[in-house]
Image (cartoon, rainbow, N blue to C red; front, side, top):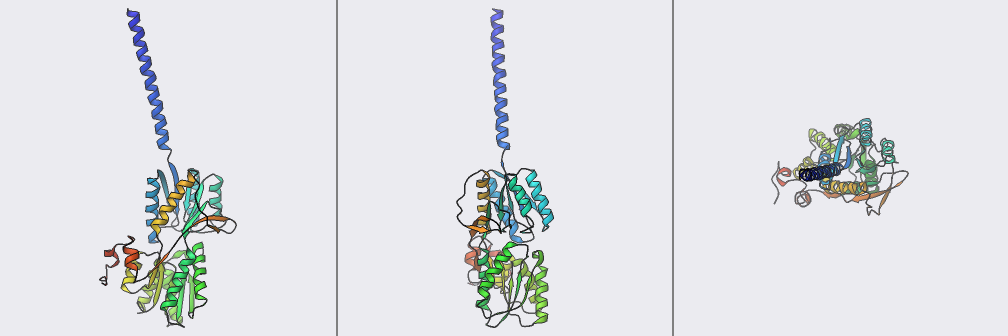
Length: 346
């Protein structure tokens, strides 16, 4: 009888032990599955431009909703630092790397290294030359140039003098914007009396450009600024020369201060690019490509040596007439912020 009881006890202990081992094994498997989240590296040029912080927030939140983790790196405008950070993301074995390049040519080699390591590479907003990335997603930058030029042609009197302040020459988008701008300007009766590229997109370059141009020619009717950050300093220079509101000024990005200037009358237009849509779409494509899912992208763009799949979104010209509908009703900026300094016209 005692032997029988002993055998039964041993069987119970054995069953409990095996059950415990199985549970432990299942727990281990579950932990491993949970830990294996998709890893996406997001490499920024800098956060000097207001919109980049918005791009970051929308991209990260969308990727997280899709079950991915995002490692954000900020190069602060230093191309060597960005290359080092991308190498770090390669070493961390990211599933995808999304890059806003400081220099469209200098990042080619390190991104090729990422591709060789089996990592999906996406050029975000700025095309990287000769890198054969898996996807380029941006806006129609030639159209951005068209919209700026069309505003100047419409608002500046025939025979008027204009200044052009394009962005950094290391940014491939600048080449495209300039191409689109010049296509419209070729048939226009306007004189470009001063032109410069803002090195590193530094806003003070615009301040210096306007003052230099005015010292050479006091009759300035329009200023084309590559973005709203440059427009801020251009308007400051015009203000110091008592010309703010008298000169047509264009910009890009629909930054809050630019929207405020438009309703105040010191900036004529900005090009609104729905960055929320861009960032959300980029995050979705990053997850799809990293998991091996095919994407339906029919358009391509040449990066200098390869045809790269290209997702192209449409920019919108915003002025005093449509700013409420596009920017405020569209949810990009708040009414109380845009009309902070002036009452809204009814």
